[in-house]
Each structure stands twice: as structure tokens, then as C-alpha cells.
Amino acid sequence: GQNIDQPTEMTATEGAIVQINCTYQTSGFNGLFWYQQHAGEAPTFLSYNVLDGLEEKGRFSSFLSRSKGYSYLLLKELQMKDSASYLCAVKSGAGSYQLTFGKGTKLSVIP
Amino acid sequence: DSGVTQTPKHLITATGQRVTLRCSPRSGDLSVYWYQQSLDQGLQFLIQYYNGEERAKGNILERFSAQQFPDLHSELNLSSLELGDSALYFCASSLRDGPNTGELFFGEGSRLTVL
Image 1 (tube, chains in turn green, red):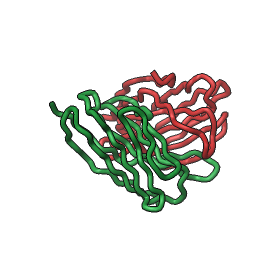
Image 2: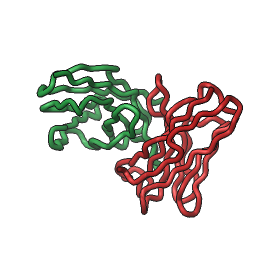
Image 3: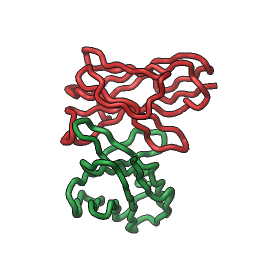
């Protein structure tokens, strides 16, 4: 089966750093994605990890440990516009592309 | 703008009815995916088409069906609608299929309300 866990909600202060964790147990692993989704809008791609380690992209970084089934998304210098849901998704399935999404972490950035 | 177009954006209908949601993928993308997102659930994968053929099936009900046409646009048909089918339905596309596909590009979604 597929199971992806992330905290339901988090609150952080503008200008601070926040880390959103994701743990997964899936049958098959071909990479882990993070997407950002503002309320009522489409998810947009943030990052992709397939090998262990840290991927940095501007204010956002994502880490993966395949042996631990664990990833985190790190957001630095938080801005009000970062208030959104952050979705962790695991790509699995041999041959075909299937993304299994967690339920998302709703991040509220406060002044 | 992801380049993926979905219509209609909003749809209100009654239980027992049938609706069709339409998706045009990004130019050049061959794969189309349908996802359902309800309030208490994450994005649930429904079905994938690649170049006109069904590639993968997820948690899609028998009352739902989909197809991808020669021009690569896709339609999701929902029939015998129930209150629980109220959700946001997303279409996404990607260039290729398989493990090295890369990211998905999502449309803005079709919000279905069943009364």
C-alpha cells in the first residue's frame, strides 16, 4: 500500500525558516516531489528528489533520505505569499507514472 | 499559467446526473492525468492516458470513465452523481510516460458541486 504522512497545519512568522516533514511508505519509489497549492488553485511544482541529499532552489530546499522514507521541505525568509498548502508526493510504479500525494500541510505565515 | 486548460471551471448539478469535464494538455505533452481533490482527502489519482491509450488506473469509480482523443485532449465522464462526488477535479499533463517523466503540470481544476 501507499502511505504518506505530513503535518496537517503549521504556523510560522514572516522572515523565519520553516521545515515541513514528510514520511512515506510506498511500494516502489521513483522520486519525491513537493508541490505548492494556494487555496482553490492548481498545485505548482517546487522540487524533485530522487537521490539522497539536499536540493536547493532559491529560498526553498528539499531533502531526501530513501533509507528512512523521509523528506523535508525547508522554506527560508518566509513571505506572506508563502501561505499555502505544501503537498508531498511520491512517484512509484514501474513503467507508468503514478504520483501518490499526501494530504498536504497548510502553512500560515503571520506578520 | 501552466498551459493546461480545463473546462468548465465550476459546475453545479443534481444527484443522479451525468457531467463531462474537459482537459487540454500543454502543447506537446502526450500524457494526461486526472486527479480528484475533496476537502478531507489529498489529491487522489484517478486515471492516466498516454498518447490516446489508458496507462494507469487509480481509485476511479466504475461510474467514472475517461478517454483521450487523437488531438490529445481528454474528457472525464462522471455519471450517476452522488453528493460525495463533489470535489475539485484536476487534470495534469506531462511530456512523456515512465519513471523519468519529470514534473506534472496541473490545470486550474473543475469544481463540481452535486446538490
